[in-house]
Length: 114
View 1 (cartoon, rainbow, N blue to C red):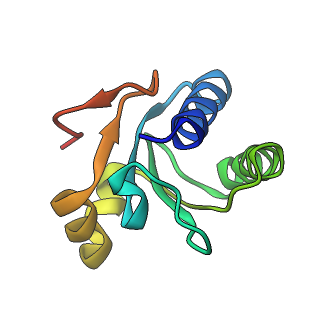
View 2 (view 1 turned 30 degrees about the vertical axis):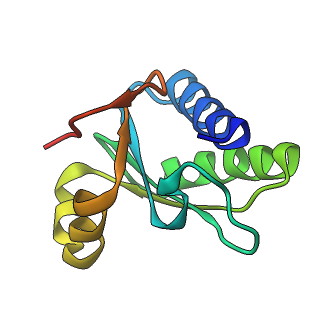
């Protein structure tokens, strides 16, 4: 995996873990699952929380913006609870089929949340 992608996952996980007690981990999916950041493509991520609401989103977007600016990347983040994620059937299927799960510490896991 590219060092830059590792750094994005690490910074996101660290920031979310520090900011939110209910952060459960994230899924990397899309073109970056090959471990590389492709020019013109966003880094697509689903972040899982126990609670997902407007207040949380208002806290998430400045975190994303700071990481994007610092590392010169584009992140397409989808914050979800696990129940709501499962209800978004198309996205859920895509992510479960090919996505990579990282625990709250930013460590890649063989098995995701269920």
